[in-house]
Length: 423
Image 1 (tube, rainbow, N blue to C red):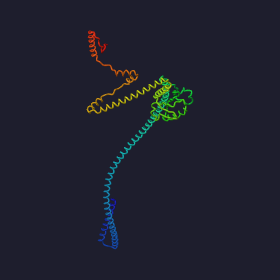
Image 2 (tube, helix red, strand yellow):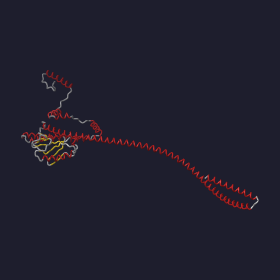
Image 3 (tube, rainbow, N blue to C red):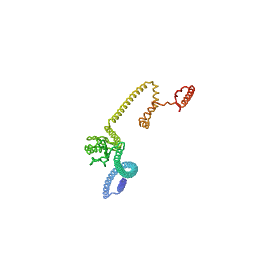
Image 4 (cartoon, rainbow, N blue to C red):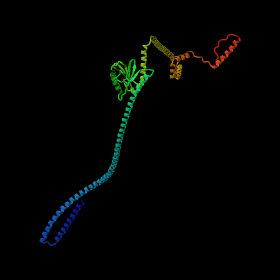
């Protein structure tokens, strides 16, 4: 824009110089004598002057146009200056914002790098933890498998020991003098029991055999018992030598897992029992066998037994009646005590609350249960108690009696029988 102004100014200077030179030349010619050649020249100069004037007019016009353009450009320049100033300020603000953003981006990149490293560390730690967890799961699984294997082996050992203990227990009880039953184990069964049917123990009872079979199971004991009931009935095969009650012996702890312990199948009753019940069953069989032997006693012994049982029955019923009457009387007394006045009743309740129940030791009870003679001695002591006399009273009475004897001896009178004899 400045170069255009310089060009325009230079042109104007040249034009003005040319016009001035021409005007000076023409004025000089006007005062000089004119010749025909000079007139032509003057005309030529005038034409040239007009042309120059036209050119000057055009130049002026161009100059004005240039000036207006200059003014326009100057206005635009000012506007552009303002815009440039604003842009510079905006640029400065943008540069500052850029610096802030660059700093933030740097911080974000640093944080991103830090997070990335932390994430990589976390992933690495997680991978290590997962590997450790898998190793721990594998170790626990192996320990569980080992534990289950040990439990299975221990259970098998316990089941095997259970079978052996049951056989030994039944054999020893049957051989004892208290029961005296003939019994057979599965290695020494009676001749009539051949084939596949080999129960653990057979106990001879009233010309029949009672089956005692120890049962074991590694899985579901209830289903195992259910299936053994049916299979045992098939093996018995209505053998008349088999007693109608069959006993399956299981460990005491295993008995708690069973929902059904009594079965009835084809005329046979099956009972699932713990080892502790074996002796009770044998004792019951002994009682039944004794009752059966009672049928073979002579009439006199049989009558004595019947009389004894009748006396027991009568005594028990009488004792029950006396206890009921005594309880009724006691209830009436308690009802009368309830009708007492409030203060007296309160004192009674206080006294009663402090009283302790009598505590009978098992040894005292067993001592009285040993024989009826001890019971009779205790009853005699209760019904005829010995008088409890202090020692100084006894000495005083002895002194009085001694003096009385002396007096009666002097009078030669028969002495009365002393109340207390000297020791």
